[in-house]
Length: 225
Image 1: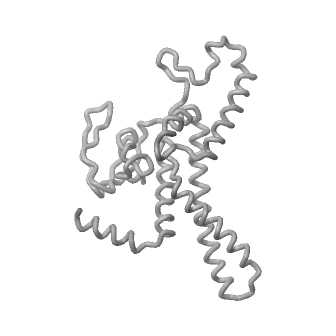
Image 2: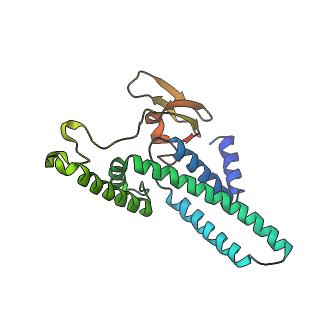
Image 3: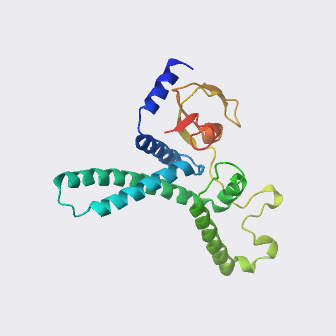
């Protein structure tokens, strides 16, 4: 461990939990908007953030109407902070729902595969939305045109001939990343390109080459920008 790591630990310890949660939520928001794939649901972080939002809303409702100038000023600060958290949460969820709408079958398969891990891909509410949305789409497609096809051609997740009918995100999309730690050699699949990613380096690289190290999708050694 070098001096930078020691200073980073001291900085983290002196920072309040609320500030750390805000920083982590901001990073998750940026990563979700940048990454072509949906990232694992940050359950512990979102539980803390949503509980804090609930408590702040209750506090604002209880104190509204108090004529004390100090209390009113305090409420203004609380409401400003509350709106900042609410904006990040709403935008974060919209980015995830957009990906669910675009690639429902692919995400459903990934979520099922992640159920045995400590970090499922989707939250319970997101999975309920995905299954309900997919059921409505399947019923609409069936009544519109699929019912007229042979039974063998009616499946939306058919993989006959080694070709999947489920749309997938573009894993070769270029993303901006910053290394939070020394990652080592990165190999770009499909090319002969290799490069060494060290702490503090900023690269433009294919998502497929760095996704296993990305924040929210692995060890967290790489931060999306």
